Image (cartoon, rainbow over all chains, first blue to last red; front, side, top):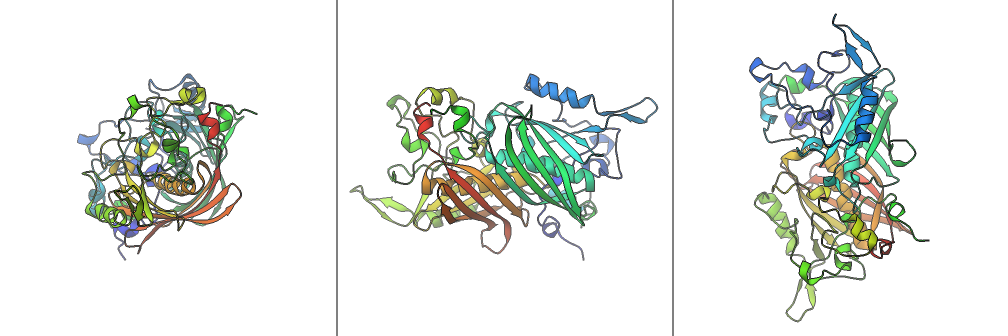
Length: 249
Length: 249
């Protein structure tokens, strides 16, 4: 039976958290993302802004950690082969489907004004500044997150919902890296210590177990030296079949 | 022992979710909020924008529900007495402490650029449009939430982190209404059905139990007619002593 859009998105939460592989370094067997699955027509082939690249707002600590993981990333040689580290940086755009074309359903959901929640503020440093590095072999991701002044909850500190948003994003990126399109089914978050606005923290996630379509993932948010635990969480993701979306029904 | 700012905010997540009572309708015995606790000096007594009032972006459904609860709110008579319904609308500003004055610690944390996460987009309709009504006698709150296009997660639908943010906000408002300043200790969220961008939903919360400083609160997000369950959650809040903050140590 053809499922309409309402049915397709029943419970889907993290579809736009899907990581795209680095340009030219695709791993089609595992990292199935909207971005890599949808070919761009040539007249639309300008490069959208990758928000996971450094900008002027990044603190020296953020830059230091970015460099630390970047040098462990795989690189493409002149011969076209990949070699090097086990890590890959996951690019991040402000709308997964903005540049895509597709069937009836796809065209209906391309709303030009819509923006990915975590990338909806263009002012560098004001909102979520983050980059996710993935280690597929070890089934884990590390996110370097710098919290901007527009994410306030308690005075001077990050809102619990903003922390939850980053946890959903990073755990969802790992789930999608391992099994393609997913939806968030559960987030269980324990808040231990508030995150000061402007600070840089590490968000580390790893796969706990798998069971059919289910991925159980754990996550912790700490200071960059690991000495202070801010938040602990578990997440459950369900694999979904993205082909319904791309085939228009 | 005097606790510094770092200690004070250990684990605090929802301080700025504290509801302020309606102007002139204060319930100082229970609704202890930063706004009502801190007197404004006369030269700063202009009115900040209350984001919980209707604006041009609100859908007819949002307006209808707003009216439905508004007419059940208590009103102040000419004689200064309160009479009428059991509900009260909770005003909402983009920074709880922006207009406050206080001790050393308070002045240190007033960062003019900081904005409450849920009110950080001024463009009406683009982000979180919501109003919270509280029924103190029944120990519950209802939030009418219209999801803007900048809250996207899955294409055309609300990000799981944005839903978590609203759940934290509404459950935290109830906890603060019942026991003053609180912090979020746990959020446990089950996602059942994604929320379409642009739609209006109801977020209903009620107190499940209390145990010392702990408040256990449950929450569900549904379509406005209650027929479709989008999200279910439980939340745990801990009471904190806000006087440390206001007294500057």
